[in-house]
Image (tube, helix red, strand yellow):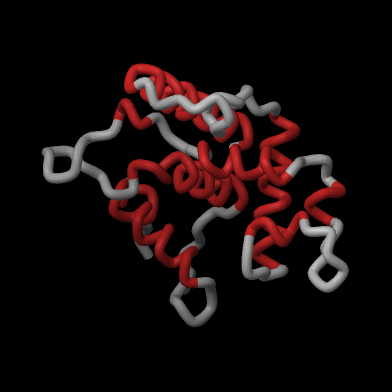
Length: 166
């Protein structure tokens, strides 16, 4: 998953840089002009900071790197990723190739196109870890809502895997 994120984020950044160069709107101090390919280690740190942010809510992204005593939290800065690099990765973050996307309203349009690689990975890992038995009950009350949504999406995409005769 990290390698996919690394590859697609860099691909999207290159697409955006080329687009701005063609439009002659590439500022010398913009994120695009200063872009360099992310390493696998940087992507892992990026996700670690995102998870940290989901646990510790602050009013601004910049506050996670603040040195003001009242809001100081050393975690994000201690990972060795600067605030500006994090914001650059966040700006260019992508999980799928936009060139393969079908436009809205066209035949074959899929509103979940951008996140299908994540859904497919989660489903594959789930299938590797768990085998369906004859007596299986899953509903919204016993599992998080998003797992229920993913299972419904997967059933729509490949229903033959989830059907089992009892």
